[in-house]
Image (tube, rainbow, N blue to C red):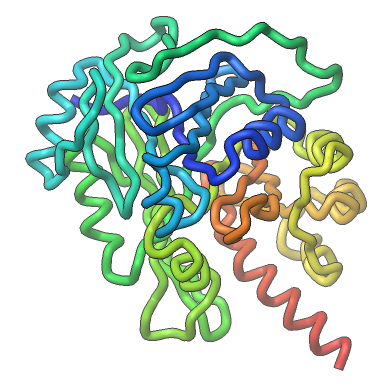
Length: 340
């Protein structure tokens, strides 16, 4: 039996209200309910099929001290939750205390609540909380739709990649979809993408190469106190208007060096007319044999600069923008050379 979708994601936050307001005011999530359970006060936020539970309280303190604000639980939808639990435990997972649904350990300090739901059935309020439903509030006009969760990016300590991939294949029925070793200057990382057969769950799992110089993955691991979720990628239909709208609301996106766009025309054909808009919004472009994609990353809104978010628009491409790591590195180097 395989897990087939992400039922919800629970974020432990040191300031539940501030974090909830970030998703509501910046990205157009709606508050669906407020809930309590032992040691936690939580808010359920939703946008389409995306559901986030933001939790604070004494039960979150140990996690927050070790990792800062971040993702504690990625709940999986399962046709047979008990069967998935059993295969996960056989693959090495530990059964964790839960309310009514089975809960098993995942990577780092992230756990998986296994929610039994037939594919296509209505999503119910997450079990284990005493929920009070909130009054619906109209979505602000012009809010871009976050269509679905494109992928979850996971960073692990060196040496943990392959055993973790095997764990999700054997324990949850995932399949290996893509792999790539990315070298950028004196830094390098190894990555493997696994996903459920339904394609409803996609993990991009990354580890640094310890034989190379420390880089961005090592920095995340240090700030996060070990492995964890680096970012959530939200799929949008049109990224440029989405970026402009979200920026107007206060979302901070990463800046892209001008030199990146100087080389973009040579790297990807057919984007000549779009270069000005991409440059204006700092949007990145990548391509593979199936098409191209556009993507942009936010700055982390959290104190430790751990978890952040990505907007991604796919025009046929099935990859994850790994060429942008090299292109950005080279663009920064050209900018440094020009300035010197």
